[in-house]
Image 1 (cartoon, rainbow, N blue to C red):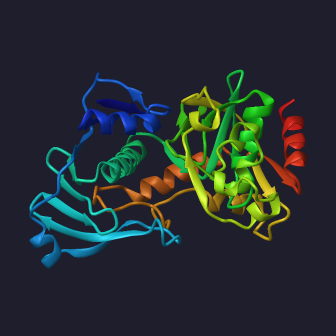
Image 2 (cartoon, helix red, strand yellow; image 1 turned 45 degrees about the horizontal axis):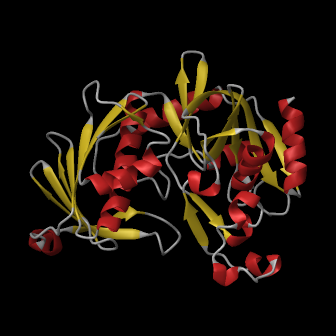
Length: 335
């Protein structure tokens, strides 16, 4: 299976069932395309890697997925040998074998569910590197929606309401989804393009109560809980777009309106320029993946970010106390 995304072509090789499962997420954002020269390939091998002795004995500890949340923070060991690197993921028990000559990554795991999870992560992490090499682009912590060919970028930090507001606009205002929580912004001539990035909806039980489309997804054991009781349960549940009732997604759209969201109920930094800068991913970030050891020009990435920022200075700020107030203000901006 070949995927194309922003001038990057990736080949994924593996069992039909695993590829089908990965495709549920990736196909909303990546084109299936077998034309052109591939940049890298990922092979999913559903068996255990049998030669870990050198990795465990001589390998160095490495962060694979860095996060403040212990449940998704993953570490492992890397062992470099010639033009190869072998990585053992201590959390998933997967082994990644990288051949730098042909940019081929083999992932080994007998557990197909974990093999699929790691496959998605590896593909996303490496595509991101190639996108940044080939395009004047940056990944933002932002949601994007579209209507009548116009792209609306909704940026904000934790608690800013991006997910709830974008879902309200989709379910109640007739917008289409472009991207859920991450958006690639790309300069293409005089245009700024917004590209969706494959990510799941991570929703709390409280969020599920906000929409008739998602009420049915609340686990039965919580069906008798009050809204206030659900509010105190912090666990998040992962869903695909189709699972929450979104049938149409748009892979890319030109930027028409850029809105920075500020939740006045949360005591965070409310300076719009600071919010924008803090939600712009760079190689210095905690969760910027670097486990694969691919060469990247960090100075060029920062230069591209500055150029894109200079083209993004025209934005609106929506400060809100209630979601209804936020929706009303956004609709006024869009008129």
